[in-house]
Image (cartoon, rainbow, N blue to C red; front, side, top):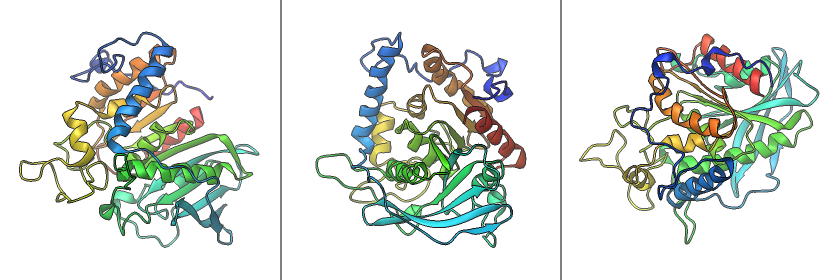
Length: 355
């Protein structure tokens, strides 16, 4: 582990001890307090069970997932390999593997970068660039810094994320699309871990916006990811923010029959699916973030994750403190949703420190 003297790991003085209305995570659902690491292990299992009863449970993992590679191309000081791996039985996911010219170690740390498509984070030459995505090149930037990276795209659950459907398993809750993507991410991790260039114990995950939601849920339910950067995904439920839209059917609001109209929650367009039940039960994403403990994570915040979200992270920090771990949670801020060169540098510093 590198130098942990990163300023964004410190809670700003104005938010110290401020939890807003976020309840303690160190209390079981029946009210019992959690006062030691052993009790936290039980509490963590309780959180997982409660959420999976609503958002579903991964089917058996593929061991190993099938993978087909195109010929490598060397350009701009790195090697690009387009590949297709088995994300689910009968469904392939397109990905782009980037290998650095000067890796950080003979078996290098690696980062998975999910997004709508792999070309944006991999900075594929000729890709379509919009202002929001101009600097959403996490995989490319990290590879230039010596990391092996695997940019993965959304494929196969529907034509686009908005067409996603839950995976139905008899006798179990429908596997919500966002949790289903975590299953895909684990198969991507297995593909990466099997490569001789990669240290399988040092694989992280990061994503921007949609990819940030994907990265957060993938890492929360999978302790094999060493650390995580959640890039302006929205780390608390917030129905006043139309982009913090976990209620949508392509995230947590899917139902086997019927489909709500896209858009914010209103009386005429109410909550649906697992999201409705999660809100009615008083669940929030602080519980998902707590599942990351004691692994480091950074919230790279913009419009969806402002500095005030330290109030939620303060509750998560209580879990880390109970486990004897401090300064492993960070929050950076920028004015807009889109990543910037400065926010990317902060992400790189985080991975340099913890991965």
